[in-house]
Length: 313
Image (tube, rainbow, N blue to C red; front, side, top):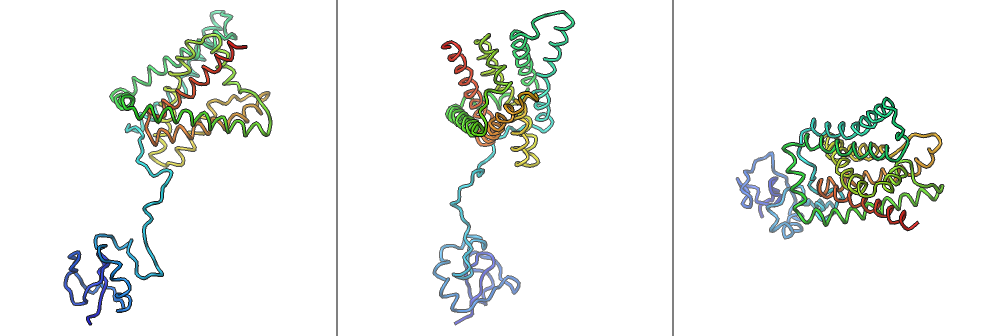
């Protein structure tokens, strides 16, 4: 019986004197021959029949050294990213505009109020005016920057899967945030932080505008600022940094640095960070449409719940 050798291309066993592999046609020479004994040939020949198209990495040399690729393993991040295809400079611009503009507009309103002798600065009317103006102007600037990429955003809402996944993600977001808050309250019972209290106050005074601005426009602005902006920019360099960095920044966006209420702020902070992580995953997994719908669903539910409670009390 002729001595058998293993073809390096397909891994099947052929006669030693073959110039080319009869299975894959790969030319044979001394550099690519791997000799095996006849016992190994008999034990493995039947198992290799029909596998000549497989790469050598998923074949096995003997029964005690199995090298099979696990194709059935499901990975949490094993999907094609749906991050918007925009250049890094535009992504960074979204983040800078969204992150800074609300603060700049608030400062402008404060200066105008002080110089004009207005007395509504400490009132809910002032706070509402600042927030409403900031979101309206910021959203306008965001769509100006988006320009020719706006079709990528709007076309996602024509797909019913965007709404199905978005609504599902929105309820998942509410459940996760509530679970984290409940867990943190096991250590110390606290109420709403300064950010939530301010929004609740404005919502009670301006219900319709609050639904429009905090429920719809605000989430759109924040999705472009933190997902399309910061997350997309960081993900081009490192996915882990994108998730963690965006979530932490998003969490501290809702954090008020006040020594008197620092415990309340710290207790509420993890729920915002978890929300930021989930929104990043929704965006990465199903696109800007799904993450925006999820964010809107979460905010609308919170605002409408606050309005119902305020009218019942």
